[in-house]
Length: 62
Image 1 (cartoon, rainbow, N blue to C red):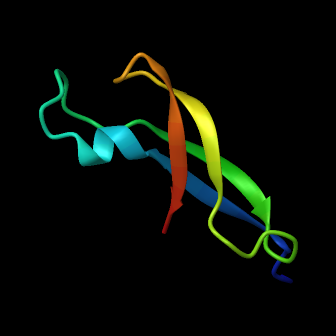
Image 2 (image 1 turned 180 degrees about the vertical axis):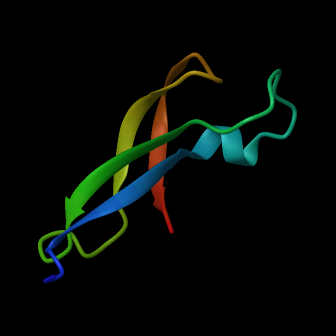
């Protein structure tokens, strides 16, 4: 089976990860795909975080 160009990535909320004094435990995570050839750097998207109850920046994690 040949390896494809598109890979599955995980996006994690940056504010939930850095804030330890939040009201609920947990980190908002989304999965998405990206083209490995066109986007070589880490992806950053604004997504809705259910723990922060607002749109925040979600960064790609390994």
